[in-house]
Amino acid sequence: MTSQSTLEERFGKCPYATAQSLISGKWAVLILLYLEDGPIRFNELLRRMPKMTHATLSVQLKSLEEYGLVQRVQYEAIPPKVEYSLTEIGKKFHPVIAAMEAWGNEYIAQMNGGNDI
Image 1 (cartoon, rainbow, N blue to C red):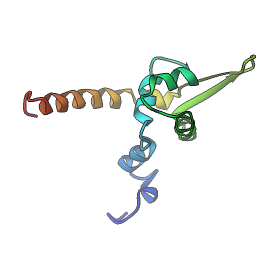
Image 2: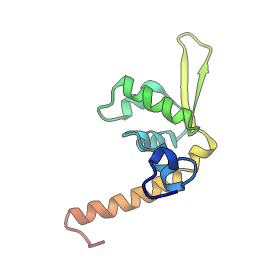
Image 3: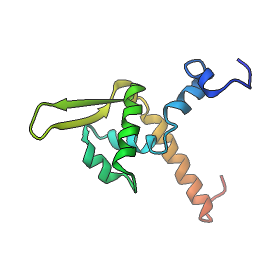
Image 4: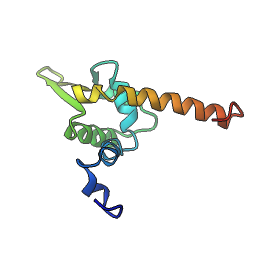
């Protein structure tokens, strides 16, 4: 694999390109974060997302579902009830989110005149 290969060509072969592709959506990381607490309904997830449209959340969830990180469960009820939750491999993303939080906090502290990194 050359350095000139595309992200699509590296998907499934290079761990970095694969991970980047899986979480490339603007809201993917926040969706995975909010789903860590357990199953959540679509509208509740939408309320938690800053300035996200219904259509955008739908597309992002479908993408994460196709990648196997999120599962969708539809219950036969009136009105229909749909919940989203993390799959087993989606749950394994937690240490990455925790590391991103730690790094983000350090970066914010530096930007606000705190300690140098």
